[in-house]
Amino acid sequence: MNIQNVTVCGSGVLGGQIAYQTAFHGFNVVLYDLKQELLEKAKEKFHQLGEVYKEDLNATQQDVDNAIARISYSASVTESVKDADLVIEAIPENIQIKKNFYTHLAQVAPAKTIFCTNSSTLLPSMFAQETGRPERFLALHFANQIWKNNTAEIMGHPGTDQAIFNTIMNFAMAIGMIALPLQKEQPGYILNSLQIPFLLAGMDLYSKGVADPYTIDKTWMIVSKSPMGPFATLDLIGFETVYNIAMLAADAGNEQMRTGASLLKEKFIDKGKLGVSTGEGFYKYPNPAYENPGFIK
Image 1 (cartoon, rainbow, N blue to C red):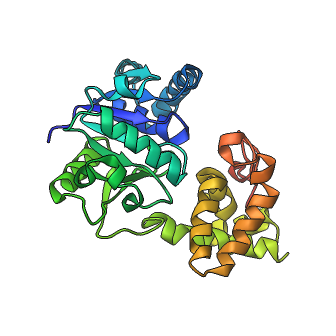
Image 2: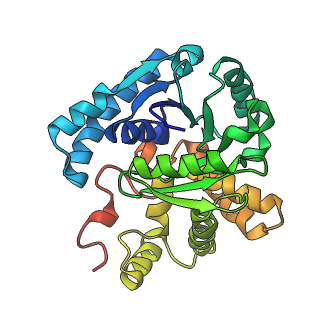
Image 3: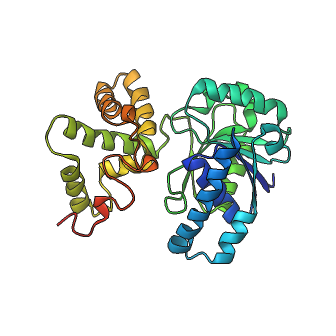
């Protein structure tokens, strides 16, 4: 199948990035969200992203202008998907919200349309039946700052058609991503299955009073030569995503995950501090302390 028209549902941090990255690579994009004011905020973010792409990817002003010109906006699900070859869903991580959304989407999207979820914590099989086309449904998962962290984890469920899976692999590569196929469903995919235990190990050290977040980050950055430690990484990913993944693991019997997740909720999430997206987490943004050249000295 030849994908040309892509609808991204949800204009949040990742939804906006997915829309812009897709348009930047030459696809027609419709960005859908519930309210017009959310779409207006997305337009503002796209102009900011254009400057980032010029700095990080050496994009020209013409590249940026062309990308923005390829994006249209809609607060109507029906209108947003009427020509869609592919819908990428990036709405809140709530299984009932997603089920309701897919039930409606199934009724208004063309039969040709492939549905993908960008869910970080929920498995596609949890709401495959609600899509009305389970064979044309799978997960396409991106990391934050997708123009730099250009992984695309592609994960089907038992009913996903292999030809559709291959189509999404090709699409991911066409928008500048490294396509990473998963052979079976896995909560947290590859990246978060590796990363979340590491991040919560940092939280465990902090919760026990072994060291403060800055000291823990400095230790990791010096030894691993990484530009970020676990707490800076937590800020970037966003606390709600980490909390949801950790609680899934906790409910499966990993009590260490529950301890770290509970601390994160109590000290940060409940206070509206979610990381980079809110301007504050373990660090304050912009210009977090770990980016200071003297931080690890």
